[in-house]
Image (cartoon, rainbow, N blue to C red; front, side):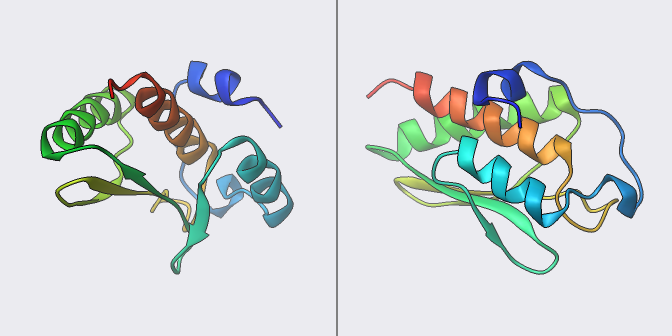
Length: 117
């Protein structure tokens, strides 16, 4: 499995069909390099709660993540509150989690790590 930095350096590609879904063993390896991410939902999605000091920082993260998602053409489901954002990545066209979800989760990690206070 790639490292977090290697995943974050990749770019999403169009993926359709169940053959692009990552098998359970691959998901376990991926979770080992994506700190705090978990499997949730049916169909499965990658999920993480990001916490921030205040609404401004939360919204800055949401807007920056939206910009990244637009550039990758791979968009998460978001739940936004005052000081938190819950991010869900899945690939509807494969019916679960694809490499695109891992890539975008890694990019979200890098974004959160670079966020001020």
